[in-house]
Figure 1 (spheres, rainbow, N blue to C red):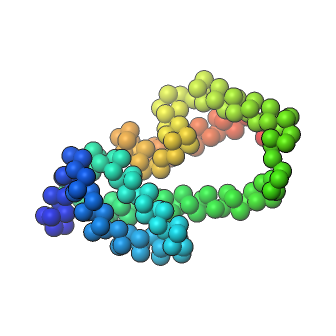
Figure 2 (figure 1 turned 180 degrees about the horizontal axis):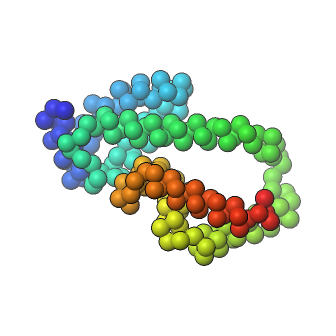
Length: 181
């Protein structure tokens, strides 16, 4: 890594916007090409590239100037790509259960009441039955939309611990929501 990049990373870590802008312009095209290769869609790749830089800025205090910046953004981008593919897979699997245009749960008051009851039950279980660490990790993941590596960095845990805690939370939720499923 060159000293210019290391210097810019130190400045970004200290919230220097001009240094961040310089890194953005230096690495945007490379990251975009890296992402387009993975997702095969330029619009999605641009969104992921932008989100990557947003996450870098939000977590700038944890930047390690001695490490490669491209490695950092490539890892974030890869995780966002995985999230995108998981989301697409869920959409594909549940395509037939999604209401058609014009059909809405708002059209049926009973469905709305059931959805509200389910939401309240999920909140009750998350707040009352999940152990504290498990609850924090679950909320960061499912409510705040953070990727597992981000959570691991934020909480100073291993990625494996984060994955295990999310699995544990989902298992507890599934067990306690069996009447709704």
